Length: 636
Picture 1 (cartoon, helix red, strand yellow):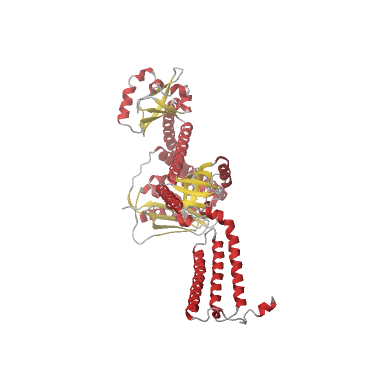
Picture 2: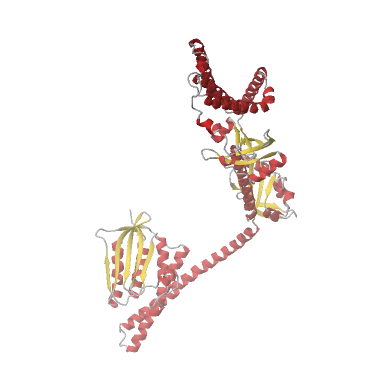
């Protein structure tokens, strides 16, 4: 065998052309024929390989490859026949033929088992019929798919795990993904499905019953949410798996309407509860009737007021709650109210009465309010038991009569007080002054001290009587106020002039200042003078050393220009906690200083300021002094 392989390319025989006796006609006939056969045999495998590359789906493609190898080997044997005409390498020629033989035997061996299947291959006519049937089925499927595309609902065919197999036009419109983009994707990953329970529970129900239905929330391509009513139906596929037909109907708008309806319903129920709670919390009896006078709603106060249970009154005419003598005229009054409904008291100026279940009458006050509803006009009646008010009015009238008598007695008393007390007091003060002037004769130091004490006490008592009389006149409205234009500086000068001796007696500076131009005020001259005299007198009284200053300024107040008369001192001042008590009667804040006073001065100033439309402001720092500002309207 080794020797054969070593001599496989040796030409140690006569070439094959010798057999043809080198006759050109015979020689070239065989050479050309073998070359043509070789080229044809080489071309066939190439074409077979090209065909298989184009149709790699053929079931028996391997047998064609075996045929290609066999034919390639046959072509090589014919090529060797041309070679051996001139070259006697018969060992190589025999090896090529042996390879060809092996290829032919292998091809035959591979072909034999599949011959029965090849025999049963459909006839071309059968294939044509099958092709026509498949074409018709494909057309029907296309028609059905087109019909599915006409549906507005999203129709999806998918596997049990969610892999999308079909996606109609409705799904494209609803979700925003095209058919090609959705195919092969997992549905619930694509749409981020939100289940009422879980995805697994829905799948379990489909596996048990073959169906599932419920509401899902999906996410569109643009990120917006859509609520769908989803219905699933399952079946077994030809491959043995499970296919699901899923129909999704967009109910987003319907859900929005339902939610809005539920919200409105809840709001109405809440409003109804609130309305009922308001009715029940009302202190009066509330009766709501329609235009025909029938009672449609009452509260618990009405039950207590009239002694009826709620069920006994609903549907009855309101006249059932009126005494018999009022029932005949009431329907006419009610009809007039319905024609011109408005909120008003019922029977203004008349005595109204209600009738209880036990036939007892009681005085009432009734207010009417109309309310227009979808089913007509209703009237809300608020009924209040006026028994206590009537009793109070009777008591008040009796008290007023007693007060009038007391006021008359007070006027008589004050008149008597003015005459009976002022006359001897003035005499005492006058005689004391005469004695102190030493007109009757000389006085000892002790006598002078006691006479001054008598004089001071008399003056204080006279001041108290005058203040009490002024206060009584103010409170009884008997003070005559004449508001007129007055030059402010003249009043200030008069006050300073009258109180200058008091300031000089205590070695205090009493000064006044103001603007260059005169400031006109609209006031009662006597009342303003009394206020300033009292304020400056207090300032002098409670200022041990330093000065008291009156200054006139102009200041806006609530949009109006006011004259501000400031009384400033360097006295003891007022503690912050005492400021709220400043204008209270008989409340003296400086008891420790043992200064004489009635405790009515500032209270009287406050009352007088109110009468002349003025206002008093106070600023004070304890131990450093005070500033009282009287704001008086300027004269226009």
